Structure formats: C-alpha cells, structure tokens
Image (cartoon, rainbow, N blue to C red; front, top):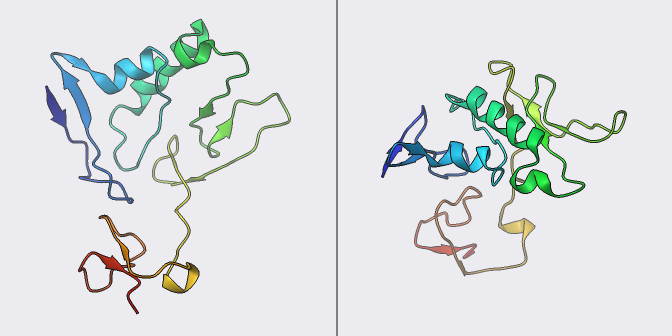
Length: 144
C-alpha cells in the first residue's frame, strides 16, 4: 500500500488529501468505478478529476452501487457550479466555482464561528481548530 500526494498536504478543513493504492489499484478510482463513492474535488488537487468523472458516469449509466438505488441523484461537477441531477427545470446551483478550475467546484466554507456564537465553555478541542476556539492551544476551548 502507498499514498500519492497531488498538490496540497490537506484541504482547507485540515483533512489529509491522498490517492490510496493497494497493490497496483487506486482505491479512490475503484470506489467511484464500483458506485461506492461520488466524485468530490478540492482544488488545486484535481490531477485525476477527469478520470474519476468518467468512472462515475460509467457507474451511473449501468446502475452500479449507489446508482442502482431508485431516485438516486448525483451532484455533477460542471462549469456553472455543482448542479443536482434533478428533473429538467428543477436544477439548482449549490456551490461556488473557482475560475482557475472551470470544471471543478469548491464546497461552501463552514460557518465562521467564535466563542460568542456558541453556548459551551471550557470544552476539549481536537485539531484542526478552524474556528480558533483554543486561542492559547492548551486543548481547552472558549476558556474566557
């Protein structure tokens, strides 16, 4: 088993971004091909996006995996944003596209929170700490 890095170490939420290989098979691709995963991209890490989209379209066309379930819809990566595969006229854009990556869309950011926005005080904080609840980095959030 080995891991392949694209451009970034992590996405903007601190999650490790890697392509996973077992023997000579890329697990990421196998999951999409078999219909057990849907394509999701985190620019600038888009090395295999075209391959993944082709595998997803194939899985959808033959009704493999989650695409075999009646009423399953897909979030399709497209130039205008992430669009649901709803009936014509019911499509809605649900993401913001980075113009540098016209076929890849970025998910919306999580809400920006601070200690005044939540009712809890002195709680355990696990990394990453995107809201910076643990200002002094001692593992305890919203101490003051």
